[in-house]
Length: 78
Image 1 (cartoon, helix red, strand yellow):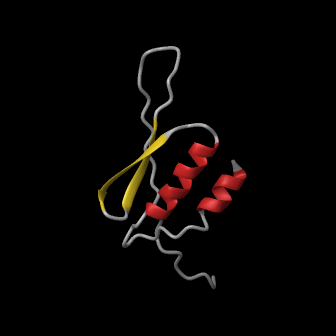
Image 2: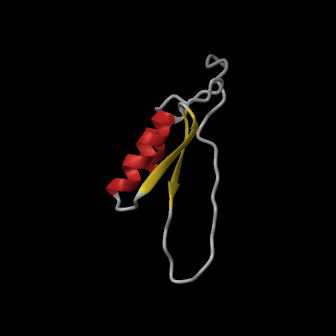
């Protein structure tokens, strides 16, 4: 998981403009590599979200929603 996170923070998704497609493409490839089929939803060009459905033994749904965009870094000299 640490490798996944360290790779994700290297991908620019600063908001504005909040373009997340590069992050989503990375996540999509990661899920595929570990055997979890995923889809990409995109209502606006470049502003994407990944979707993965895990089938379980019990009925029910859990939805996790997080931000893929980040705020500008600010003054890095501090």
